[in-house]
Image (cartoon, rainbow, N blue to C red; front, side):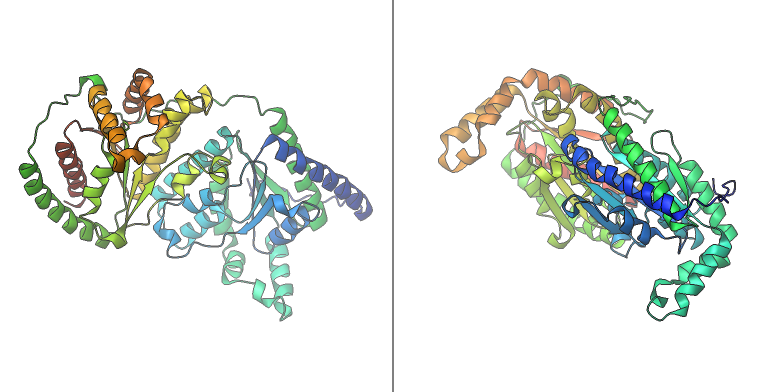
Amino acid sequence: MLKNYEIRKYQMPQDEIRALVKEKREILVRQQQIIKEHKLPVYVLIEGWGAAGKGTLIGNLIKELDPRFFHVIHMGMPNEEERRKPFMWRYMETIPEAGKFVFLNSGWLDETAEDVINERIDDTDLEQRMKQIRIFERQLKDNGYLVVKLFLHIPKEEQKQRLEKLEEKKDTRWRVTEKDMLQVKKREKYEKIYDRILEATNTGYVPWNVVDAVDKRQALLQVLHLLTNQINQAIENYKVLPEILHKDYPLLKMPKLSQVPLNQEMTKEEYEERLKELQKKLKKLHNKIYRKRIPIIIAYEGWDAAGKGGNIKRLTSALDPRGFEVHPIASPEPHEKARHYLWRFYHRLPKDGHIAIFDRTWYGRVMVERLEGFCSENDWKRAYNEINEFEKELSDWGAIVIKFWVHIDKDTQLARFTERQNTPEKQWKITEEDWRNREKWDAYEEAVDEMVAKTSTENAPWFIIQSNNKYYARLQAISTVIDEIEKRIS
């Protein structure tokens, strides 16, 4: 894309540029109110050569905008803590709420190119990284985001002259980095890497826009024209439903819930003896996964009153409290609801060597949200593939992903509901919503069967925990966690 890009020779008169910039700015200001009303999140990524004018461009773009509804973020290279998370984690963190702008000063293109230049990733890693970028961008677009990607392009001599001019003055010398100078020195190598990434991530749904940045005013006009046009198109097309993808992830054959036996028996004495053995073993393994920096993500779903809380409690009793966190997931808060539904789960991912346990998960999309009408049919049908992509990204990062469906039969649930309602110290555990959900048991069971069948992959399998007997269920869960860790570290 860069090697074939021709810098324009024609220079538009400055007074004509000023008039057009003023006109486009006024349009953008009006559009800011429209995107707020339509709840359209706009994510603008600005990449480019050092000294190409990224900061100046952003400053000019936001000049007349209402500062309550945009956010400018300078990414830079990730620090040590950020490198302990999945690659796309910090970009998912920056996505805007519905109806707002985010302007990103450098991002996944710049970081990926630097990782190649500094040999932090090899060619296989690069291909995987570019695939993750395409998935990230497509998911944002499918979930209602407008993603605008810009690359500010200037010739090598122009870049060199600008950097030299900045270095001449002590007040601007700080703006010239070692990376900027390296880009000039190794311009051809950088251009080759940029071209490869640009071409691999230039898709029909989120294309790259190469901007001639030699004249900063003309660059501003070009970007204002691109941005206002794409906002108009996004508003016009907001009712167009995204394609429902079904990619070929290696799925495991799973039984239906009705086929799972629930007649296990175990005495309290047997349970307590075995529990101590398993907790002791898990404690040792926790030290190993911390030393080897293996992240673990344990996802709990299940019927109300199935015993998820007690199950989690026995599991965490064996862990070092400094190395795990339990995330109870309730209905999304307003700032969570205003973003991509996976955002709040990315936000809670552990760093490598740590454990995150989710009490309710991203699978709410294909259960509660599906059955209660909190999302459209297109949303929940699309989610199976989106979730498989999310979990594959976690697996590729190095995480062990373990998913539990804690299963009981309908009679056991009724007995536990009744006990809770009749026991004062347990009444807080039972709500009207629990009773309402029980009335939809058959619909939920059908949804769970479909969920398990479509998302039990080799890299993120489902385990059905037989929980009519809570003692058996707790040991089954801990044993499964131990087995999955031992597979990785053996």
